[in-house]
Length: 553
Image (cartoon, rainbow, N blue to C red):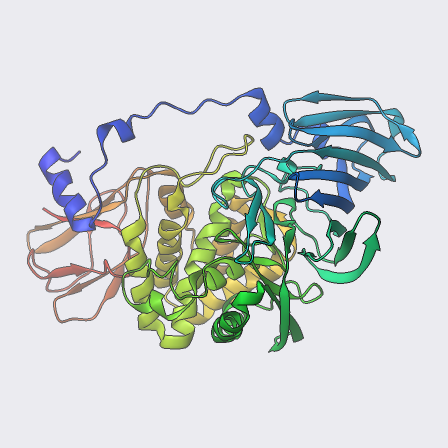
């Protein structure tokens, strides 16, 4: 289509790294039966809808050992005699109990198949309990890998946390390990050695001293929760609290930090949490979990969006471990982990994708929320500069969409490239009030639901009045950027999109130097562009708000 020399010119224009040929020719990923068991939705998973869990766990910190049980309370969606739950093979199933009797079960990889003595009838409510124990996987680089983190605080006291997004919650507890079926509510009971505290999701219902020098902490979650968000956080925590007067009334703010961090935490959290909530509620609607409250918990890993119990490990500094990811200066004005991980309460926790292949919904909107936070507090231009600056992190290395049914996410470009995509849609819609209503409408329409990425796209198309399907397809499914190719012919500006998606039709802004921007909608066929006075040397494309390539022939 273009010569090698021209492509190099385009890459320089875009400010992108040249992609090595080896990177472009990577072999297609292959998947196993175990991947399908973990990521798929066969009948043995969809036959039951999870209503309630009671996870009851004892943590032997010294041995790095877990033991306990999980109660599964469910509604049958069809008649069945067998079902699947999930638990990593290094953890042992002790018993599966059903109305006082043990049920037979069979393992395959990290899946467990249970057989019931008689058919469970569609529409009936029933329950079973799984007893388990073992040495859980120890995370080496949480939150990028999954498992349990065993660390110590400055006084040598135990400091333990879980992080399991991607790999799955069944890496440390028995569960129906798929995002498509969120439990409606649950009780999380964690027993820890005396002198330590556990902080989990929801609200603390009570504590109880147990035999052997253990204390159990019972946390009640009243809202639907995806299972990778379920967390235990164990340390000699100090606690302080506050209240935010939000859109739905008073929202409790609870903070659990190491004692040596107390003064730093009070200052850093005061500077970031309420400003974050002000911005997120303005753009995305009310905080989705008023019943369960909002918590920040200091953890030995960087951070994770654990619902109503956000994990925080950014060392009480602004930026991302002290670095501005946008390189604009705006990222130095807020604590990245507080803003980003809390943003997931709206996208990731309130709205959860059924398949991790659509993880772009979680990460693109949440990365975009950072720019909206900057805009809320420093003005629209500042927010646009921040989002533009974050393009420096984009690799354009492949599809942002992952393959469905095998528990595999797409390219990491789902963060910054996804945020740029959303910002382009805002620019193309050209109505900030409508755009804000779309964002808030997503949270309201899909409140506490699991969705597909296509549902989100369809909603944006419907509410914007413009079909952006081909735009989403280009940016989500292809690493290459679309290129606006232009030429002057008989004193007329002609243009077309060169894109991987046939019929790509993104409206874009053009101007002549010194003039006002106007919208044109090129297609993939050469056609006149309405820009009076255009010459080869004076046409300017809005590449500040649009992440596209440009070529003037």
